[in-house]
Image (cartoon, rainbow, N blue to C red; front, top):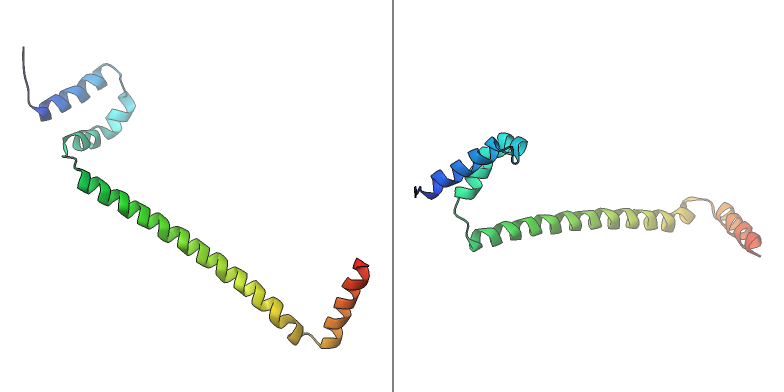
Length: 104
């Protein structure tokens, strides 16, 4: 029985898959990346750090989106609050009366 090291075994497995049309297109395009991933030593600390960074980025994006929404809501509320003081009181009160009459 022939034995080979891990690195050679990974390369041989990728070549065998390509030769047998197993994931042919994917391995032709990404074979070196697959090889690097399989040969790179994995450890829990690094995996948790990557997951933490991804989660942090997602949280920041969510917070920014909420902040933009709050800014928009506050802008709308501000416009509604100052609109009556900008428009002449007679016009504003007249519009309010028309609304009340329409509701009745």
